[in-house]
Length: 248
Ligand SMILES: Cc1ncc(COP(=O)(O)O)c(C=O)c1O
Image (tube, rainbow, N blue to C red):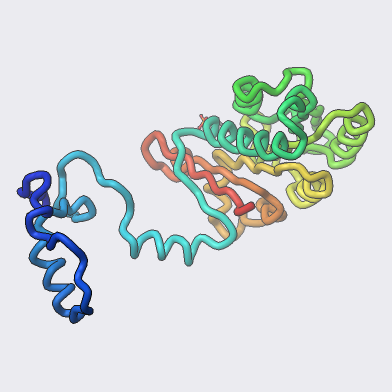
């Protein structure tokens, strides 16, 4: 029986009017649970329960997840655009807690001009001023990668004029030029400036499962968050975008 057949309030008549003064045997307590409590339980977690929707994962499941997830955790989102929006909002709220809510107009986001337009869209939704989105020029001399020197210079300049650099988005496999940003060096720049470092590997992330391509991920350990779309080269049906966020 997966759905209880008891009427609301049935348990009231099965319970004594007051708590016992003397201890009871554990077996007796278990017998009470079996006879009185379980008939009133709807078994939401049962694999044979098809009514409504499942409530959450099993206790064994989430304990396993906690043991194996390492230094962060993740949630499957619909798209990479949602991923970057979610982490941008988290980073924004994080920095505003330190800098004060009136600092919103000072917050600055950095990425190369090869970055997917999802970042600009997320900035608009998050209330980041369009003039504070630094889409730094990348060109063929650096294979369209974000230049660490240009990033450093731009951050230093923004700091001198009183702005607050708070978010860097790198890409592993830019949409139009397949560029891979130098994660290690730009990640360290982000960290030394107290910024959130997000890595968008929307389509190329799947390829990096292969040992021969894994070096493209070098430096990913600097990231505060990471996303890849299983619905691209993992050939999963739409929508399935995996987002990982480091514990803060
Ligand atoms: C590098 C990169 N980031 C983000 C996106 C946006 O992905 P989605 O359509 O899942 O929002 C794409 C889509 O092609 C992409 O190539």
